[in-house]
Length: 372
Image 1 (cartoon, rainbow, N blue to C red):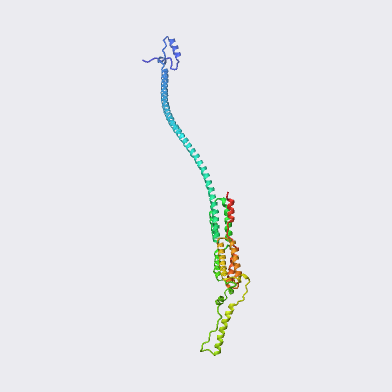
Image 2: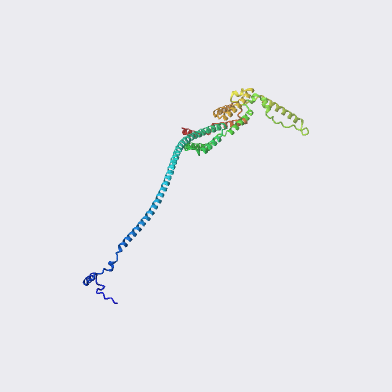
């Protein structure tokens, strides 16, 4: 059975259907949507509740995670604080240690500074003492070298002392520079000058002492004519002719008379002798006085020698002048030994007049100026 068509089309509105139902006198039928209960609020509320639950869960998870992080951070911070406290304690302990060490170092530094000042003072005293010792040593060396020069009559002791001082002053302090220059000046002056040769001078005096006993006096003939005549070589007499060669008896007689005459003449010439004597004292000398005259001459020469060895040139010149006076006054000037003795005496006197010993006056003056 077919259902009658719905005069109300599908496109008709509910108001129109209601109006049609009212016109037909039938009760109106409620629509399908109005017949079902409304569920969307529930869905909405459920969604909101679910969303709220999710949010609560997320918030709880986040709070849990945040709490864990905060706990870890708090633990880390506590650990860091503990470590920082430990480090602070260690740093404080180190600071105290460093403070104590610094105090010890300051004390040692002050002790070192005090010791350094004491050492500086000691070095200054030692340097001053060393300079004073060096000055005293230089002076004593020069004095000793001068004494050796006077005793030996040679410049070698003074030259050796000045060369030694020149080497020592090269490493001395600058305050000795004037002394070093003075030593160089004295050394150059002594090396360029000529001084007395005492050994040669003593050899000449020894030669004079050797000649003194051989000198002939001016009155030698008057004191002992026979002795002098006997000391002179006799006049050669021609040898006698062998008997086999003799020409005659007259020649033999003439030879005999010639011998007798020569002997008589030698005897007479020894008894009378004419000679020139300038000083009357020389002619009146007795044999004893002649002996003491020779001894006195030798004593004068020995005194001159001792004076030269003692570096007393004035005394040596005085004794040599007296010896020369004795030679010229009492001894024969024509004799070869007398002339030789006079020449030796003149040479010795000339060297004694030029007697000049090397001295270090410039060095001593510079040393005196350097001394405080």
